[in-house]
Image 1 (cartoon, rainbow, N blue to C red):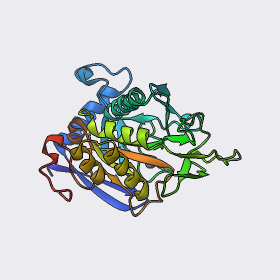
Image 2 (cartoon, rainbow, N blue to C red):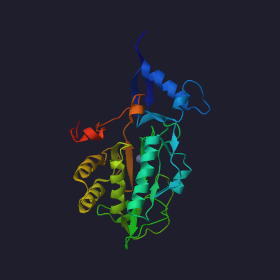
Image 3 (cartoon, helix red, strand yellow):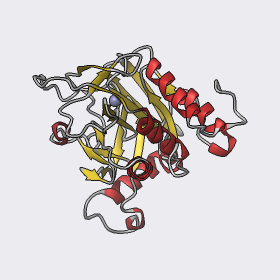
Image 4 (cartoon, rainbow, N blue to C red):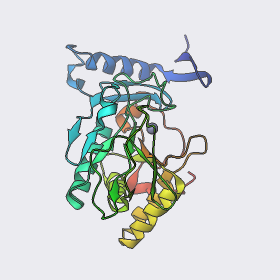
Length: 289
Ligand SMILES: [Zn+2]
């Protein structure tokens, strides 16, 4: 009998084949049982664990944790709440709530609006090419008016020009047509950089990418240097802030993806792209490794 179990799956991007060791499959089943509501028995000690399985674009989510609709420094935008896409692995939910709270502590008065994470069990990504395994989240950019006052009660995402000026409402992933006048606003570089810095500094979560319009990334890196941020942090941000070539410009939101946590990796979570996940080792690895 083969030592491996072969799973075949057809997806919108072609036929895929994944190999899982028997040990991984048994482990996955064990954890799946442990996270089913009401499940008791020998696996009960892992109840509550959340796991990401597969890749960001073809995966699943077990034991999902919902991001509370509001908390210190953030809220899930009202148009996104009804979409049932506020679920993620607990590591990402924890990292987000800590980072939003940190921004609020550093620069009180702003509010981060959150869009989609994943659906409760992952998969089903008709509105996204990723967000399938509880490791992705969309976040509006912070915005301020001409007097540097944070904009509140935003009806939608705002598109920003290369110099940070607000240029238009985005139809938004929520799909609502916008009739409201666009306020005189620009990107809030201070809070947006503070959010990036907080996410990258959190020892409990490892960010793989922040997808972002490249000119906006440059503005944030300039802000970091103006604020005399730690050069090591700025160097990491330079690697992680990235506009993918196969996606529309992220000029209306940033998309954060975290690496598979160790626990999820052991059960079949697969990272695509550069593997820079160990912070202590990061500086010893080349960006292309
Ligand atoms: Zn996204």
